[in-house]
Figure 1 (cartoon, one colour):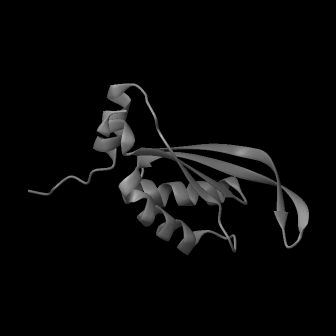
Figure 2 (spheres, rainbow, N blue to C red):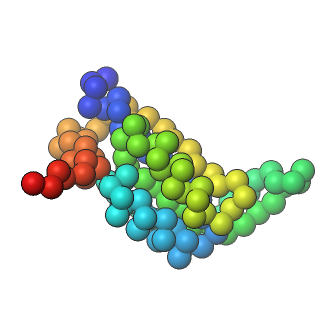
Length: 114
């Protein structure tokens, strides 16, 4: 696995509504913390909560970014997310199209003003 692949991650975040996912997406993109956010507007989630199995329709965010930005992403999301315990899970990218991996770097690197 190359260094270029090692530092890229996919982040999954669930939200109560598609509107909330859009709001979080805009915040993360504006701050250049993510290269891309895909939003699946309706997923059926089953989970343990408060000692019992619960079920809810949620939106799922699939985010492409760099591993180094994960702490910032977690901080931003926790400030604006409506859930008491937001689901924010990161998985490593183990391979992919080199041009796409380069694009993640370019998209998440702020431009220096001259």
